[in-house]
Length: 219
Length: 223
Image 1 (tube, one colour):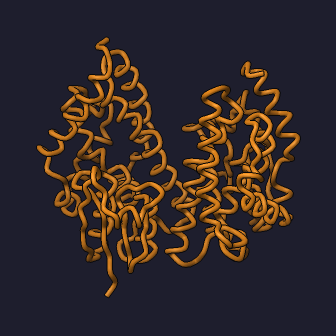
Image 2 (spheres, chains in turn orange, brown):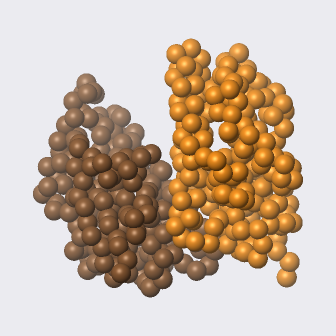
Image 3 (cartoon, chains in turn blue, brown):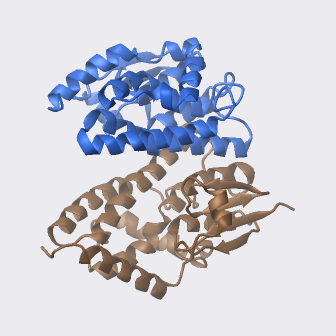
């Protein structure tokens, strides 16, 4: 019996993009259902009643929620190719730690760059680069966070790259000047078709966020 | 023989999860108690990012973040599995453990540190979250089924710390009528031998958290 895989997603979401990359890496056929997050569908509310958020992966009718949990699920079910996590328990723990760090730290500091002004924004900029300098430290001289190959940590972070133009314009920062290794790493990741095809276009994200800022009265 | 060291404090519920996991699997380890007001250089070396406990050091290699430590323990020592085998059930277990830490713990803590109208609002949110958790126990003795598992350990703080906070605040969050399944789970979990033998002394917990609540509530004008 064929697998039925549906992804409830929102094109802008860096969390949804993580799942798109994972599905592409494994070559899984799925149905993408774009969600209107400002007018949530009954299906989304049924599949994620607790958080009411995307992404949600629906596999043969059963929902899986929370992007990094979904990615691990994909890795465990479709375990015959393109492993996303290492097989060694310590290296797995290490990968989970850094993906969790991205979740705990990167989203919050990045948000400030396009939702705040004045003093709050200045603090946000400082925190943003503190976090990315830590990430640069972890990357070190490796081509990917995963080592020689693209892995779980790379996947968890690269999706924020689609929002870099947003951060640079509204935050008035130059990411490449402060964190050249991160930009070099991002460009390396984008050479992978699975990544390039899964990330939203930076310009389109910028235009959409510009609209969002107007609605929020930030312009 | 493997060298296993656990850095913890006497009271942190996060380290307790690791203690329980190691004890459930019958694994030997050494304990190093940390004074968080004066962190050891070893702790700072092993957990430079967060500088927190627990840290589990296995053959010189550090593991941090309690839920991640639990997954590592489960993958390294296969006896008495904490997570289910089925990927869908594993994803569900991870979801509820994360919900516990991200939402439930935070909302219950808010009840503990607030007073007056703020506390009333915090109680509503906390009980909403606890309601979601309650329903997960439908037809089960433990979140894991017949035996204690990952999600039970993740919610372990509900079985001891919560009653300490309830006593100090004079608030009952988990009453038997509203939360019959959670109430029963608390009895079953707290009464399990491996769990029971590890509880920090209750009177010390009361003293510690009483002092903490005084700090938080003295910052506010009473409402």
